[in-house]
Image (cartoon, rainbow, N blue to C red; front, top):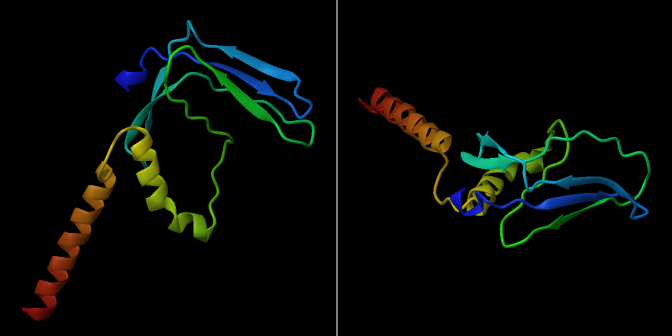
Length: 129
């Protein structure tokens, strides 16, 4: 996170006709630090914004920045997953952690594997001894 601590992009949200719907100038915005449990990562949260998309078509977001940095944009209020998407969660976690320069397992994955190991070992001992 230190590598992007001073990164302050500007965002412009465009409608289907390329009309500007919203502008966000973030140079003087102090971001909220947000923890993401699944990836066990921290991010800077600059804007929370609700907007109704009133026209059919393709909307777009433009990010303008001086200097380099990373931007992560999410849309929606509620996450719903199909079975195929749930199966892809481990890959998504790896990608999310790589985006944040992390490698290896998230904390909850380590604890989960430890608990599974303890339960498995206990069952083996109970069955065979």
